[in-house]
Length: 120
Length: 106
Image (cartoon, rainbow over all chains, first blue to last red; front, side, top):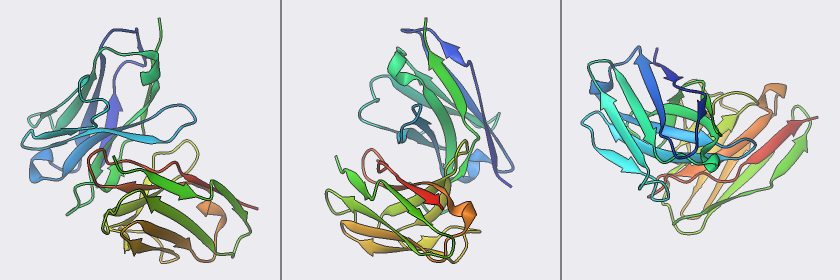
């Protein structure tokens, strides 16, 4: 079955780059679907950060677009998030996710989440 | 930007009761609404997509309806495992999520 696993530093300094990787197993990214990053600030709701298709086409939340880059490495079956510069407001649990077959927006498969704190 | 408003913010019901959750969009989103359940400390779980289609493995007691701007998630005969926060989400521009409805089982 499809499994996603986030990895990356749990602590990032303000103004640095927040970087996370999502390793995918049980399914090849090259088959299709959209691969996304979604975050949740402590005690808050969900915020879509952006999505990428296996071809490399990206879609970003307009509110984050100037600071976000999502990329895919099909040889390693993983995709990555880079957010720069990081601020305290970026402290959140970061989830990677995959859309439901045939859907470009409904996320069926999720990683367990990775807590990232932005603090000096 | 299309804003999703969920109501009520919270509800507390007994096992076996029916829960009705609302999601209202500021502009029409056709039928492009998904619903998720998030239990404490867990990732969200997709329940419904395209307003009324149950995702794989989701029990039949979960159903979705609506189109345009008004959508409903109904949970018939609540079970204790149904506690959590429920979010709706649309597919336009910023794939926005609603603010959530917290469901407590008495």
